[in-house]
Length: 467
Image (tube, rainbow, N blue to C red; front, side):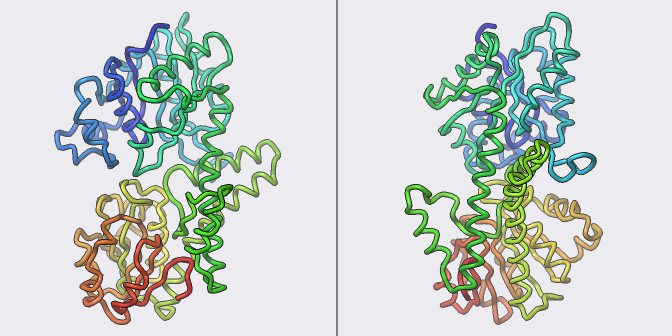
């Protein structure tokens, strides 16, 4: 196969959109088409108002403005784009199964399988098929079996694993300045050629020594392991935050002390209300299921504890709000600042805010939510998906507002659930003056100056510190 001149990416979500936008920017000689069957999503990608892009990432709209209509295209013409491309990326959702074997842990691969069958049906020329979605080990073999057994005669397929290592909120910088790019493929002459062709794409902006080639199984597993290790650090420091509160130690001081050890390092040691996002929990559960399926129960139990600790931290935070407010929040107004699972993204998947709000609503609190990037309909959809109350009850007892100052009027407490920078700049004295006294702040992200806010008059709880 000659050098790549046309790429198709199936899936216009949090991975496909930003990744293909950066490839288009750095490879102006390659036509990049992102396809999706969701017409509404594609329309949003093509919207003249770049503030209406379906995904918020710093720097993304500028790249889309530069490349869209030049060599970057968003379309619902899936078959046509697959047929034209020499390289097809699969970047569709792989949620945790909600039924059947592996329910609650294994990845649901139905969308990946549908993509493979569609590629097989459409392809009339050889294709390099790239797994971009996070997938269980040995998924590549399943894709290859589908392609080889259902594809058109004479068409050859090479399967590559090219997992993403993006952190939402910094995805564009992560793509432009990647620590490493991992490309897994078969250890055969044709497999090596495919790996080299994908490597050449990334070499348009990344040093060659940052592009790692492995066998396909190592690549698939590395993605799961990377997320598991990062999540493990968060759960580890969060477990210590509970101990700090019990012993009058300070988690910030403990984190700093252990982070200065060069063997440990300082990253991912910030105690919080817990991790969220689409990857950490899903990938760890996948790792748990894979370990169980190979009879490695002790390995499975080890990694499952990371999830258990994360759930405990969210539950502990909600319980602390309730107990601090004299063991009842019924009829009390509690403001949640932040709904996204982290700052600089509008992604809410597995956000701690969803579960904190749910716990407070179960206690009949009056919950008010402000987030600078998450739309009202998404907030209600997240709550509705829990199926703990009717849609009518959710809309009656939870209000979404656009003015953070107005939200705090006559509130009993404010909880910080996303580390948006703007929260640090608020006039907290004005907020305090319009709240019901005693006024409480529960800093679930440790972003506020506790001493300063206590000086104003707030009663303040920061994770990992005694009140």
